[in-house]
Length: 141
Image 1: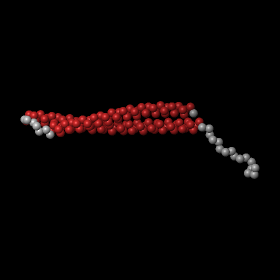
Image 2: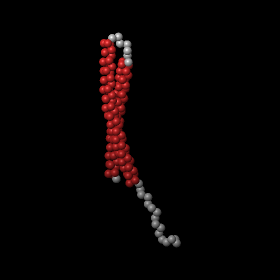
Image 3: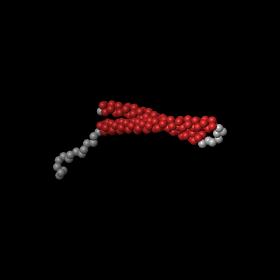
Image 4: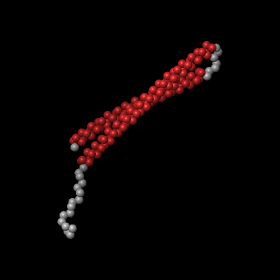
């Protein structure tokens, strides 16, 4: 009985550790999703700026046209880089979500084992119900 209780204490301690690991994984997943969102927003804003500047036609001379063309080209390069960063961030965010799911599965498994251990201890502590006594004597009594 004492060993059963020690095992339950160990399982509960492990459950707490797994809950902390899950919380850490959740924080990391949230940070990865936040980074991904920021990169997507930056890419979209850069695309809109490049489209806006690329559509301007009020240049007074070739030098101004050349300068705007270089600026738009720079914006497009920034956008391509940001899109690549967003793709990498998507992969990282997906991996973090998988780690979070795995951490939850591990925590839940330990929780189930601890609950089973509690039931085992409770069942061992119960007084067994004695069956009916066999009648003595004969059926005529």
